Length: 420
Image (cartoon, rainbow, N blue to C red; front, side, top):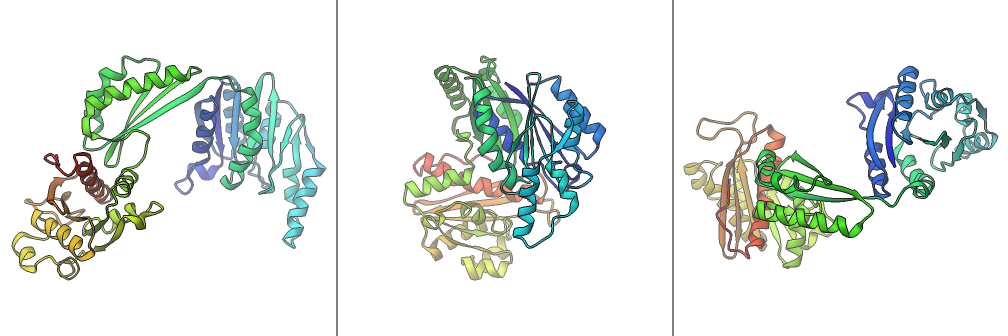
């Protein structure tokens, strides 16, 4: 079955609100074999809203909308769909009593405008919404299914799972989407494409998407089929080819971010880590501690922006900073060794660089970063110049630091030369 999603609300056409409902709905629909062909965001305009529903009805059998079911004059979804299907709106007294009860529970009088939420298109099934005043609606018309859902995610998500999903599961076929997400670091989008294009093009039934993301490249593989074994065999074959083409640049085959991969490695090896960060401002520590249970492997860290605190907190000799500069391989090494020694962790990471937009020189331009990883067997340092703005440079630096830890485990501590 094919579907379209219509997100309703003028606020979604501003920079202030993001349509997250469509992401949730797409994921849930894909799980039961329903493919989303198009997503549309429409403001609170009756003509444009009518056009969006009418065009969708001409393309797909299933339409799911979110928003526009509130009590105010700019909530137009109910009325628009009723007009489009040539159905009258009728007041449902059960819904009205429910809404009145919600207001009474809050010791408030229900405003008259809320009566609009009790108006139901003729023939529609009511999808009860115990978390809000706007019920959802299920309509069928000439082989088409239209689902109208409230906009607030805290209402939409449980309502969809509890009342819409069981109905859709009865309609969906045995076809399902099977998905793999490969994540690569150290190679840009075009380099990844160049290496793997000849592999995935041998499988035209698989939809392959190569996406650039901060500090990594993602490869999404999707195949729609009712043959589970065929899907698994096909995706395994493609991924095996990618492993040969991309070698140690693949850090995840299930979409896990790099910090989760490192967390698993540290936990499995009963290892701990600490960080002394300058230009990343604690971003590495934040990523490492964003995962539940991080206290098992992350012992602590410092953000030492000033030269004085590099010395006081991480033991970097002041004369070294004076001689080599704060942004240097030598200072990165001293930061890594100093924090590891002070904290007593298995690994110590030191990061120093110029995130910009100012502060760069001809010798050390913006984006220059030095990262070091210290452990009992010695220390590795990597110097690189990252492109992008301040936020991008900081993230790429944290990504490169995490990747140095990954490479250490991958090669059992005998790391190859770290590539820039």
